[in-house]
Length: 188
Image (cartoon, rainbow, N blue to C red; front, top):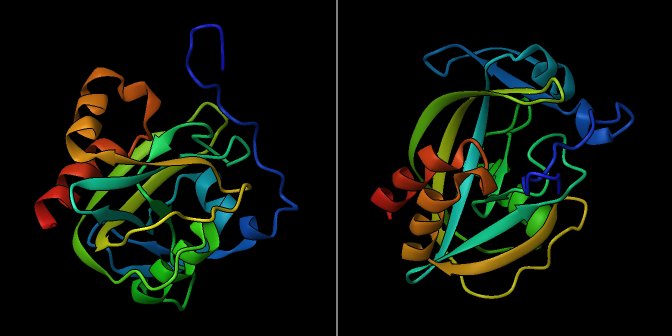
């Protein structure tokens, strides 16, 4: 944490990270595929690509995760249950359970898409997220078993507490979270 109390940005990612070479789906402003690109390169160039955000609920509780400090951006910030990208040739319906299992050790959560939005956020380390973010919701109960390279913390939170947190301390949450949360809540 920096002197201001804000979580500082993680350093530029190491290009030797195998996930940095994943092929992402490049899209146009109507979310139509226009090509593919290597994950790290896509983010360094700020190219528009497909992504997803998952919100798992247990009644009125939302499973929140704190991103690992080593993530290529937004390390140490809190966000929804899971966020990632489908790989080239992979549909969202395959990518969502894959990433839930990889990031959080969660299997069997049935999720459905409830909306999508486009956003752009530039980070201090030269990374830019420019995404068509598909929002998924599901019901699930339990304790995740997160990969520490992906997730440094997690907690179940009452939805009202999450909304209050977003209003009081938005700097502790990821750039996409303020837009994705209302879509997830409306689609529950």
